[in-house]
Image 1: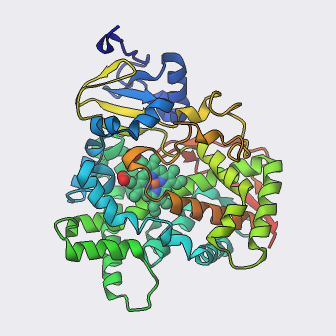
Image 2 (image 1 turned 90 degrees about the horizontal axis):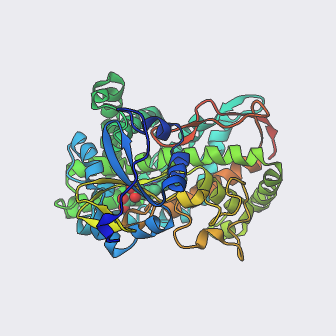
Image 3 (image 1 turned 180 degrees about the vertical axis):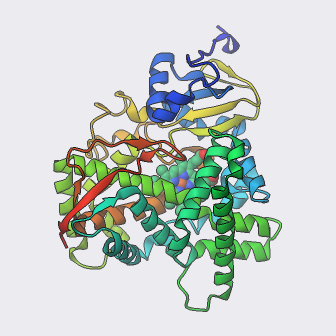
Amino acid sequence: MTAESVRTPLVRGLPVLGNALRMAKNPARFFVDCYREHGAVFRVRMLGREHAVLAGAEAAEFLGTQEGRDSLRSKEFFRGLVDEYGATRTLPGEDGASHKELRDIMRRGYSREAIADRLDEVVAITDRNIDRVWQPGRPVPVLRSMQSLVTDQLGELLTGASRPEYVNDIRIATMYLLNVLVTRSRPRVLLRDPRYRRAKTRVLQLSQEMIDDRSRAEAGAKPAVLIDDLMRANRERPEAMPDSDLMISVTGPYVAGLDTVANTMSAFVYAVLKHPDVLERVRAEADDLFAKGSITEKDLRGIPAIRGALMETMRLYPIAVVQMRTATRDFAFQGHRIAAGETLYIGTTVPHFLDEFFPDPERFDIDRYEKPRAEHLRAGAYSPYGRGQHVCLGKTLADVQMLVTTARLFHRLDLRLDPPGYELKMKTTPTPGPSLNFRVRVAGLRN
Ligand code: HEM
């Protein structure tokens, strides 16, 4: 059988809508079910458009190979967003040398360096949010509270100032941009919605404010590596970072970090509260971690239960279920022919749910990641942060942020599900995560 002769199956779906409803309901489950039924390569239809899907461990590995880099690109998926903001390019939408140039400008700002020496500040920001929102006796809407907390943290760490007054605008603008322009799961006409127009204006205002504030910052101001590096590039190499691109780049941490981190930490709270044995271990470790007051990055190596619970949360509740790409040329994958110009979903998180990689995959088992099991280390098995050249630039920062924040919440608070037997409902746009009505009750302060 020649490579070109393998027929790629088309997943059955509804007229016009295709597979959109099934996918919208539970994207992770949808791609796993299709993989089980059709194998590693199949086609889906969404609202009249057909997309090829490469799924599983080999597809995840493919993203990191030279052939993968030469055959796939991200540009088309971010073009609409770049145009909407009058920019020339944006990191996730560039490929090859242009992508490397932007990634090099932003690498330091998004690295662990941005957070490593500031863990006590992360704790202090978490505490001020706990004191404001997570009060004993009160039901707490988890996702919204996490969104405020994350905005507060990322603002301080990456841009030098917290801007809680913009959290709703960032959230609304990001939602419309991802749904309409990136995933294209909603019609373009929605960009005329006054709610979006207002949020967009406010986000542009936020960008300008951040740039102006940082220009005026005096010596001794809090470090903000990312915004400083972006502004230096704008001054010294305006061809690489023109004003228009600076405006969109300074809000990058919010767009990339707000939903992803808030969703993941909300799912973490649910999963830990749902498993009393895990809760006990998480609390014990968190209490030890904060027993001596100040914490360092080294201390985070000694919290295997919290780390395991976070990794398990990211396995079972992935934020980026697939990576979207366009084929730059004709190529073959496992005998299936993909034509230049086709749009593809790379199902990198499908192995998260497969027994051959994670035995008893539905079980929330926080000990999978320690040696000798180390189930995540098998080739292509675990990809919560994506794969290949666009792999999450903020992943180390995000890991540290989430470990410290969740440890602090469980150290300080006696949280309970509200109601006690609550079963998590998920939202799927703009990114999958716990629904807005997920609440916990603060039964008391532990510390
Ligand atoms: C739970 C937390 C997070 C998850 C699951 C996550 C996941 C991802 C994934 C899957 C991608 C790749 C998308 C693709 O290939 O198309 C990505 C890219 C990116 N992420 Fe994250 N992310 C998280 C948090 C953060 C945070 C906190 C930041 C920074 C503040 C950040 C910054 C970025 C950037 C800048 C990119 C673009 C990289 C590039 O295109 O080269 N992420 N993230």
